[in-house]
Image 1: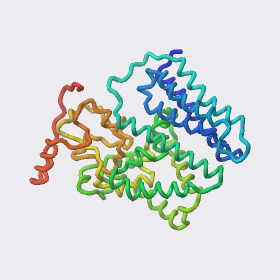
Image 2: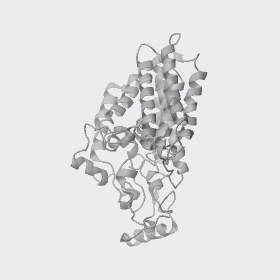
Image 3: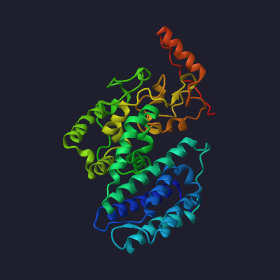
Image 4: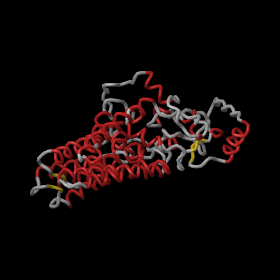
Length: 382
């Protein structure tokens, strides 16, 4: 069977949709049943969608990834997470959800050409980490609702302590690129969904906030970068008020309902627009991550102005890196998509190059910013 990239995406999308359906039925209905292999369906589906450009030309490699949920489902046939004696129908459906894409991809071939550049290692690590965190979140949630115990509170307590108090200081807004289950769902699944959104385009006045310093609360390294949209920060106030007044932090259903609410609302907008303009947790973390230790450095003097890293295509938070004169602002989620999109070496890096250090030092001393280099007429990828 010959498959194109579009069909490869559809196979993995429908497998993930089936897994979501079985998960919701098994966990949030009186059935109270979850086959552990279903969690690995999420992993295989997300990984295939994250790396569709690399797996689509070699579907049989993706098929080997899909063997993981098949094996786990078969191995845990007699030990599902359940209140009762088990449910043979849900077991069979879980097995089919992983077995069908595995067989389809194993017997497929493709004429798609693999990308010339290998995938950045940091992005491979990020996608694996994202998928594992999503599996952890789904497993903790299912255990809470099926077994009736409260490991979810410990999970969410640690989640908030690390992502609010510690991660922002060292890793910036990494939660929005590496940890948030909604971010994983959007980057892997929602980005590949082509249905017409109810709110296809935000009002221009709101959408323009993505690239303007409308809420200037930055530190010195962010003073020339686009910062938080007013809508993002304004959404923080009612949610903080509700949590405080009704003391929702100790309620089992609240963190689960909150995350599911974000996932459902994200279907209304384009990819990541929910995160960009309306997720109050996104702004909450971002406020604490100004001057974080880990940042992407944009070396302006090395940039060829080829416009390959356009904000709408490369950055989930719609940051136009070519307009940054120093380094990524607090709005950056450290997904490294811009670094991978750039066809030139040394433009977007982990550390600032010596020429940029000298330029910034001179600017700080004289107070006169150096003019940006003009875009060259022709460019040649490295």
